[in-house]
Length: 244
Image 1 (cartoon, helix red, strand yellow):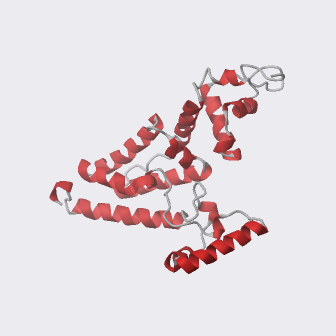
Image 2 (spheres, helix red, strand yellow):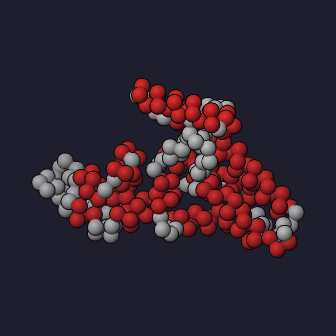
Image 3 (spheres, rainbow, N blue to C red):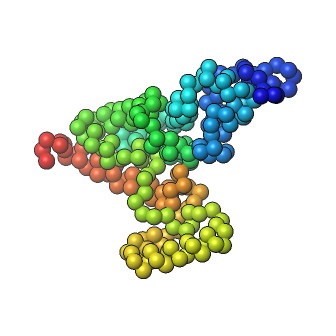
């Protein structure tokens, strides 16, 4: 394609910036942050970098490897655990840090769910969380079940049970608003208890990870603290799955 090089974009003085795997991944993350993960392709990323698509394949074998690398780059942003923190505070801090990272990259939950297996960065994150439990004296047995209980909160988001309210939408057109109002009326008539819960409080759309309507910071922390308090109680009681 005319106007594109195979090695990297020019800085304006005729000298090209070398293309590297790190630069490809950083550009892909920035593109997804701006335009969404569905808009990302090898061709669109090549255009972003000012290179021909084939130049990317020297650094990532295919789209799946690109997505794996993007995910690991994002997970690497999770902050270090505060030194000397007790295990519960350390785990809480790390998961809240993961949540802040995913708020910056709201496409990441979709990519996490699409992977056929854990990436190196995902394994490193899980290993660190497990290590915090074990360092706090929890048994491997209890830690195993705690990780299952935490579920997607380990990554900093939740897969919500309840349907999103109209407040999760971003400035719908009038016809969309009318349709939402009709759906809300049908919901309230058929499922009054669900409707009452959904309407019970406004949600902060700015704190929603991945566009999931009810997953605001308060609700995330509320459930996280319930889980950690329960895990702490079981640890204090010397709980074992063999004694159930």
